[in-house]
View 1 (tube, one colour):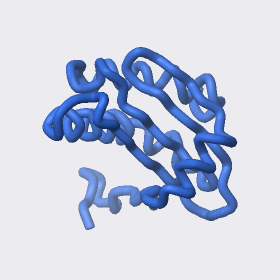
View 2: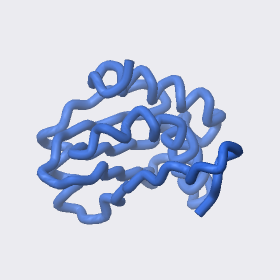
View 3: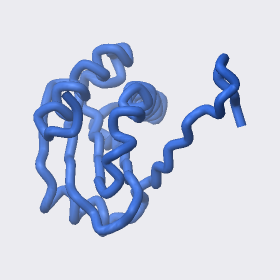
View 4: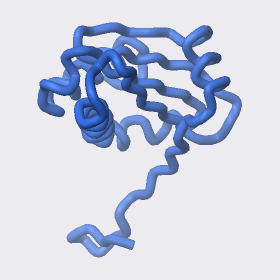
Length: 124
């Protein structure tokens, strides 16, 4: 366990990955979506006790290197919102990479993600 400078343990956030196709389909059908040229975000309530997150990048994005970079950039941008989303335990979030995602920095993705999460009412 890592310790902060104050000697207190670092906060641990329980995030469950969304892996099953039926879960993705349910969230696509029932969730609220926000779209930008960099990112698409789907938000849906779930019945569980954990925040669940899925990140997808289709083959339209490019080759495997570009898809992996897109997922990595989205994951890095999402980490900055973990403290704000810690209280939202029964949510499903899906982030879908778009054509511009592999070519931008994580700060640009973070701005788009912040706008989407504000539209959904999850952060201020």
